[in-house]
Image (cartoon, rainbow, N blue to C red; front, side):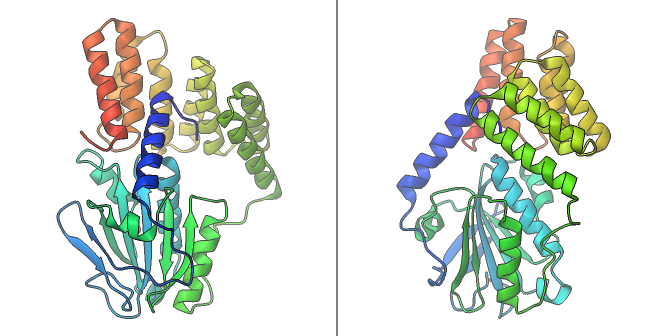
Length: 333
């Protein structure tokens, strides 16, 4: 993930909170502590061993507990992978899965968009942890962190972060906990060419994270030559080009991603950011505002809006936009 200036502030604040709030992280084989989460509408989700199920679900339930931040890309990827695993779990088995989410970064403007990310199967409890007791009791020091709890109330697996093997490991835990032969953790198998391009893109991400944007750009162009139909590579290239202030080519990369995947909100947001850095300030402001209020990358969008308003000479409005960006990084409004 490529960060803009304010993202680092959010990351540091989040890490500081987690380090202060967390106790010892629980490991596989230990008993799962009880927890209570409050939903955005005031409903509660309770878990008490050994039933291994949030309140209102049947016995013999496997519980997935995800700690995440809605504004964090890795957290959203973890949620996407969990949703995919649950979607591909056989029908009867999927009804024995309860899914509780301790989520930060939610507010009224992004709640509806967040709800669309939730898996269609299983007993879902999307909730908050207002007293942060679950973070402490489970010893969470990184986001996302995923716990799979078996039907007897024991922690079957703990996955901090979002490693490349995340979906496969979740699927393996569900197979074991549910006693079923298969969960389709993988989509269609990648071709050797696509796998090679994925490895190159991963290297490009590492280079970008170290500030070597020119090198990252070259690697991504190579990956695109191998798999030109992958919109994700175009988006990744667009973000790198933004960091290089190559606004024209960045916009072209995002437009191509949208041609390949017209429904990609990430590509639309990237294109709006690129347009906002161009010469047509009115078009840029219109593009940014059209994406605001839809629940994704709000802090990013307000940050770019602040930059644009500064260029327009509207200092007060720019300051207000930067303030909104900061508030979104803190999950407030």
